Every structure is written in C-alpha cells, then in structure tokens.
Amino acid sequence: MAALGLGLVAFIGGSVVALADGRLGLAVGLALTGLALGGLSLGAGDPGGAALIGAGGVISGGLRLRGGAAGWGLMRPGSTPRLVLCAVCLVLALFVTLSLLGGQDAARRLAVLSVAGIATGRLTGWAPRGPGLAAAAALALALALLGGTAAQAAGAAAAIVLGALPAAEPEPAR
Amino acid sequence: MSAAPQAAAGRAWPESLPSPGLTALGVAGALVALLVVAGWAAAIGPSLAASPAGRLTVVACGASMLAAVGLAPPRIRRWDLLASGAAALGALAALAALADPYATAIVLLLLGGLQAARSGGRPFALRMRGPTLAALLVGAGWLLIRSGSLQMGRVGALALALGIAAAAGLLPYAQELDPDEPAATSCIVWTGFFGPALALTLPSRLLPSLKGEALIVFGLTLVGLGLLNLGWGVVAAWRAAEPTEAWRSSFLAEWGLALTGLGLGVLTRQPAGLRAAYLLLLAIVVVRLPLYVWSRPVLRGRARARTGALNIAVALALAGAAPFAGFPARLDLLLAASQAAWPLALILVVAMLAWIAHAFRLGRTLGAPSARTGAGVAIALAASLALGLAPSAFTGIAGL
Image (tube, rainbow over all chains, first blue to last red; front, side, top):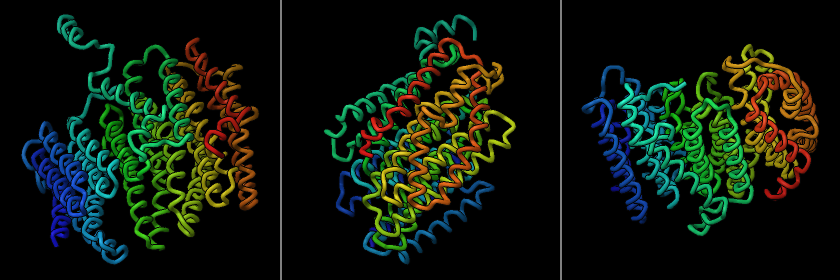
C-alpha cells in the first residue's frame, strides 16, 4: 500500500513538472518525483539506488531554481492539453501495469510509466527550454528506477547535469 | 563591446578557448573514451565492459571527429568544436560500454539535452524530440521484454528497433536539416555519429534476451525500417532541389542498407548481414560524415561546386563502387538478402544502382578543397579503401 502511495506521489510530481512553467513549480515537481521514485527503490531493498535517485531529483530541482520564470506558474492559460496528458498517462499506465504486465512490481511500473509518459509528452509538445529540461530530468530519473546501479548513477548524474543547464535560450550561432 | 572590457574578459578566460564548462565536459569525455578504449572501464564494474566491436567504434568515431575538426576550413571555432567533440566521444564511449539498456536510454537523453541546450537554428523542443523518443522507446521496450509476457515481448522488440531509428534520426522520426545550422548542433550528428555507435553496440547486447517471436519482430522491423529509409533516401535524392537535402537523403539511404543488413543478420543468423551493417555503419562514421562536414562551404554558398579528379573519387566512394568500403558491404548485403528471400536482393540492387547518379552530385559539393581539407578528404578516401580492401580485418575484430 505504501508503494502504491509512493507511485501516486511520483505521478503527482511528474504532473507538476508538466503543468508548471515557473521555476518553483518545476523544482518542487522534480524533487517530489525524485523522492517518491527513491522511496520506491528503498522499498525494493535498494538503499543505494534510493539515495542516488532521491538526491538526483532534489539536486536537479534545486539547480532549476537558478533560472526561468519566477513563481510556480501552475496551470497557466493554455495548459489544458497538458492536464489531459497527465490524466491519459495515468489511465494508460494503470492499464498497462495492471492488465498487461501484472506481477509484483506494479507500483514501480505504474510510477515509471506515468512519469515517463508525462515527461515525454511535455518534452515533445513544444516545451520551452526550462520546463523541457526539467521534464528530461524527470524522464531520466524514471528510467533510472528500472535499471541497476549503473543506470541509477547515470540517471542521477543526467538529472543533475540537465538541471544545471541554463533555462534561458542562448544567442544563435551561425 | 569596447576594447578594454574585451581585454579584461580575455584575461579571465581566453576567448579563443571554449567556456570552462565545455572544457571540463570535453576533458571528462576524453577520459571516459580513454577508459573504455583501453579496457580500464571493465575494471570499475562488469556493466562497463565494452566489446571489441564497441571499442573499435569508439576509436573510429574519435578518429573521424579529430579529422573533421582538425582538417576543417580555418574559419571555424576549432577548440570549441574539439571540446564538444571530446564530450560527445565520452558519451558515445559510455553508450558502447554500458551493458544496461536503461543506462543507454539515459545517456541518449543526456546527450540530447546537452546538444539541444547549445545555440542552434531549431527550437529546443524540436531538437529534443528524437533523443527523447529514442530514450522512451529503448526504456519501454526493455521493460516489456523483461516482463516475461510473450505478447509484451513482441511489442518491446518493436519498440527497441524503433528506438534505434529514433536515435539516428531516421524515418519515421527524421528531422529537418537546416544547412545554416552548425554541424555540431544539427541532427546529422545523430545520424552520422551517435546513431551508428548505438546500432553497432546495442543489438549485440539485446539479442541474447530476445527469444522466438520477439527476435523475429526485431529483425523484421529492422528490415522494414531499412527498406523504408532506403526507398525514401533514393527517391528524395531525385526530388531534392538543394544539395543539403541530397546529403541528408544519402545518409538515409546508407542507413537503410545498414538496417536491412542488421535485420537480415538477426533473422537468418548468418554473419553476412551483420558484416554488411558493420562495414556500412563504420563507413558512415569515418567517410560520409567527415565528407559532409567538409562540403559545408559549398552547401552554404561560400564556395562553388566543381567536378575534379578528387570529386570523382569521392563520388565513387560514396556510391559504394569497388574498391571502396561500400562495395564489400553491398556484396555481403546481397548475399544475406539472397539467403533470406531473393526478391529482396532484386530490390536492393535496383536501389544501389539508382543511387550512383546522386553520388556524383554529392562529390561535386566538395568543390575545390583547400590543402588542409584536401588532406582530410585523402584520409577519408584512404580509410574507405582500407575498409574496402581488407574488410575482414575490421569485421574480424567484431567477431563477424
């Protein structure tokens, strides 16, 4: 039951990343996603992985606070398609996890599939740079939860590096 | 900016050098590449052991990057490109060494983010689209294969094959190629640099886990994607008004042959198809990509196209004529196709012949290269000759 709760918290964190345009919203969403995914890893008996993924999410979120639009920026006008995206991803993740895959890892798979779907939808749907980088970091953390130590370390490092990249568009170089 | 602040900034960090962050990334990338090539990465953990084929790929990509940067026209920011290239080489070495497909997916995503964050002509979201889809498809595909369900295993195999196409920027995920965009930030880097490395190393790690129908789905999807890209590349080259688009089509067509070979190798379990794919992908990295970079002055209208002896030699190499790299690869591919289904060999022959005329158009875009670029072209042709005359020396390293 605790694992299912953590899976839902990860989904909420991913949804906040998708629905926020401000740096505070993106940072909180990333931290929430990382901590929930880390909690799931801890529940599976992998404290090292939990530390890596949790730290990756929190540090990446903290770095995101350095730039971008101020405030939460949640649910600004035009965000309805993203809200629908979150709902559709949750339903699809539930369907795939419970009906098609089954097994003991249901909460973990639910969390990964919902966060990965939401992050991919946000990234490929003309996301501005800051929210796009935050979504990429969330996707890296979700993938890290599925793998071994190498994937967890790569996921945490990727989330931190993506969080460190500036949110402002650079000058075009020709 | 006035002269005084410029001088002050110059004292802090020389303007001729890349930024400190990019320099650090470049140094880290070069170190990772060295660790993987020397085999020292395996000492860190068994999940970091690159196969001999993977190590050769990293060496080939490193040589190609050094040649493309070192022998490019003098007006480019050479140190900036070198640092970016070293960072990219490190990531590529990680792709070749990481045994866990989830880690591979994460590295793809990181690479996409780092490349999309640099200044370039296309929007951030558009540049992230291919790497994101590739990461999702590889990750989801591996999850489904590992689920143990036969039905989901087939879907997973399909996703993995599509993931390779998405990473390389091939159809159905092809992106727009802007001739004015710097080569380092354009999608051609994925088609000519990261994509081949992924295709050369990922399938060998996946194949032991793919059983029965999942293996057939994986092979058939690769063959289907190969024929789609080959057909599209040949037809699009006929219709292309701009030489940049013709170059783009040439990459698609060559990738089409490589994917077909890879798929046939998976389906028939004979080495001919895999050998063809291996040679074609190596040739993309060490021959086609540097030649494209050196043809950019003509593609951007800064120099004029011409037909000289060097241009004709380049055209022959790009067409896959004997004794260059493409020839033994094409022979192996036809052998693999005839082992699987002879009508497929017929289609491949028609596509290969139709391609020859475009190769001469591409050869002209090198124009009259400077002494420096001419030396680079000569090195690329020599590499193509080496691959063509002694293919077994290279395929032997990969155990094919």
